Length: 215
Image (cartoon, rainbow, N blue to C red; front, side, top):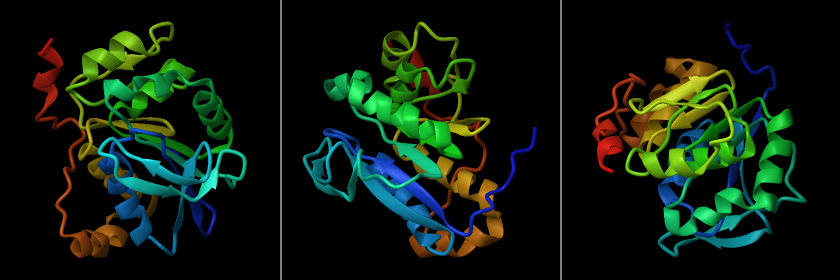
C-alpha cells in the first residue's frame, strides 16, 4: 500500500532525549531534518525541559518537556547502551511515546531506540531492526510478549509508518531514505552536498549483520 505524502506545509519533528542517549542517534537525523528548514521544524524533548546528558556526558538542550511538547508529525527515538537500558521500560517514557504515536504521522527509531517501540507494543505485528552489536540484547529483553519480526540483516526497515534503523550511523541512512520518501531525491541533493555525505541507498545492504551472531 502506498503511503500518502505529507500535506502540511511544515512538519514538526520531535526528537526524544533521555539520560544516556547515544549522541549521534539523535544528532545524525537532526542534521538532515534541520537542513529541510522549509519542510520541517525540529524540537528536542525531555521528561523535563533543560540539559540532558548523552552517553558520553555531552549535554544537549531539551527544548520542551513531555507536558509542553507541541503536536508532533514525526517522532524520533534514539537508542542507548545496556547500562542505560532501564529507560526503555520507564512508564513515563513509554506512555509519552504511545500517546504521541497515536497522532504522529511517522515514528522513527535509531539503533536500540527500537527497544522503546518493542516494549510499548508499537512493533506488534511489525518488522523491525536494531543495532547489530546490541541485537541479541534488544530481542531477548524487549517486546517478547508481542509478535515482532526482528530483521537481523537490514540497514533500516520500513513497515508502514514505522521506520527502524541499525546502529548509530545507520540512522543517517534511514533519515535520508525517509526524507527522500517524503520529498524526493532532488530535494535532498543540496543537503548531501552541504554535509558531504554519501548515504547507503540499499536498506538490505547491512555490513554489520555478522555481529548478531557474536553471542
